[in-house]
Image 1: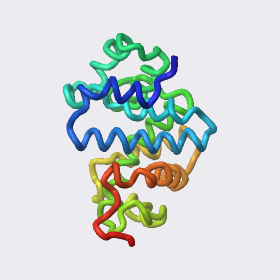
Image 2: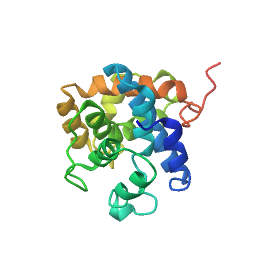
Image 3: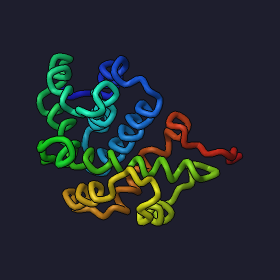
Image 4: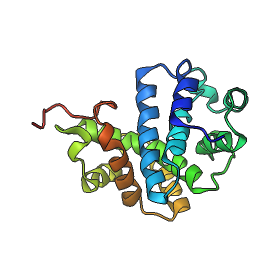
Amino acid sequence: MNLTFEKAKEINKEHVTEESLVIHSLNVCYAMQGMARHFGADEDHWMGIGYLHDYDYQEFPEEHLQHTKEPLLAAGVSEEDVHAILSHGYGIVNDVEPVNELEKSLFTVDELTGIIQACARMRPHGITDLEVKSLMKKFKDKRFAAKCNRETIRQGCEMLGMEVRDVAEICIEGMRPHAAEIGLLGTEDPA
């Protein structure tokens, strides 16, 4: 059985409780929904993978993804879906290589959503009117959202055979409808 967004929320509810991590999980989830739409894949499944990807991070930040496989398998998550989740740590904390579009997308958007979030938070209308052109200026500035690894993003885009700006546009479009939920409506009321 493929993981769903609802199932991912149920599994994560006791493991990912810090607001910033919940928001990050949602950002990745909605970006993955956009990527699934782009590839004509199962959006609910990709959202579930995105939401669950940092399952063990809150409890084991120094041992990220080392406490993921067994608990998720025990919770009924398939081997394939666990592999997908583990693959976002490729070359960073493990050697689980992303091999399909789902895994390559997760690997790429995990870091990219951090830059999108940081950029949207600086804007009066948040993500609601964020354009890729503005985001790419910030992407080029290594000091902006410095913790977000640009090389990982570029590597992921290369794996996907896509340009950073194209993946960013898909992610923004995926995240935009959920602006209120993910705290990216901005500081000014657009009305």
